[in-house]
Image 1 (tube, rainbow, N blue to C red):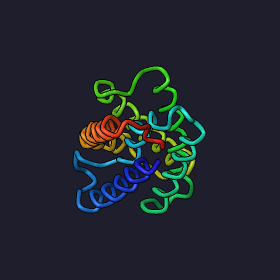
Image 2 (cartoon, rainbow, N blue to C red; image 1 turned 135 degrees about the horizontal axis):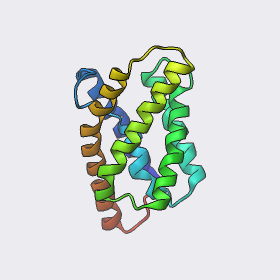
Image 3 (cartoon, rainbow, N blue to C red; image 1 turned 60 degrees about the vertical axis):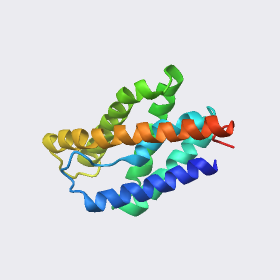
Image 4 (cartoon, one colour; image 1 turned 90 degrees about the vertical axis):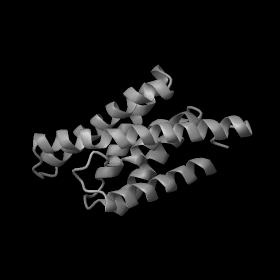
Length: 165
């Protein structure tokens, strides 16, 4: 569990740092906490309840640091955690599948955000901004997913233990 916490804090710090130095319309907009949900699920050893609690916690932390909407991020992280659980129980989230899963989850996350902000919070967001937010998030988050996955595989293989220990 300590490695999951270290990865989450590192992701949070790196995401916060990059969002302050990069323009929002760049092709490198980080969503590292969402990527954490994808990569780290397998290290929860299919303990869905602990993973959901982890996702909600990350949602509340993300909400506190970078958002001014009430409960938007925890709700989104909860919904994404259910999708990650569903996908992970159907296919292995390995290096090849990350190339497909990360853009899919980012797209779902952005569409859910768009839907909630437009229809529930009544903040007007155009379709063009939605498309831009999707494609601007994919490149750096795929690279981050591969890096995080590699690091966790290396640590897991080297020390021969479950990452949840």
